[in-house]
Amino acid sequence: MEKLIKLLLIGMLSQATFFMDIALCPAWEAGQKEEVRQPQSTLAVIKRKTRKGLSTDKQLFRITESTRYYDIQGREATIHGLPVPCQAQIYYVPVRHADPQALKIVIKKILPGAKKDFPPPKPE
Image 1 (spheres, rainbow, N blue to C red):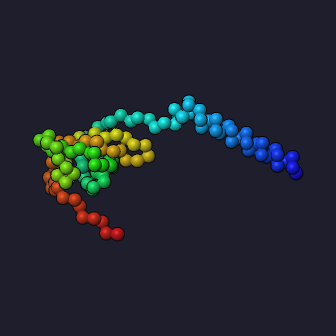
Image 2 (tube, one colour):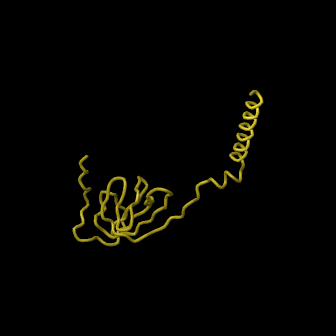
Image 3 (cartoon, rainbow, N blue to C red):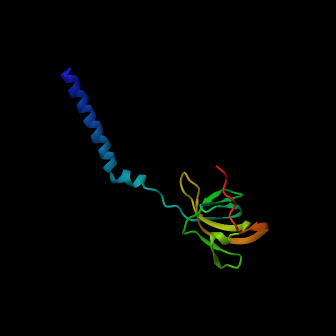
């Protein structure tokens, strides 16, 4: 019985050493780093806005404090000044396993019925 316990302990130690070697290996580390995503852009119709994101005819986009907005004249605006619905060029960074993050939104065309106010919150 003692021999069996010693063999199990030796096996567990060798397995732990193997995994530590992999974890500390620079090549393994380099392969695990998040790849840098290049900014992209799309022309889309913004259908809905919230303080955290935009819903378009193509997909959802996350917005942050660093997202920049430009009105139809090219002047910098705010999320509050963004008319919805509108057609806009959206510059964004893809995010793995999440909605892309909008970097810059440039309004190209204001569509009929556009409003600048936020929609009322949904009841819980």
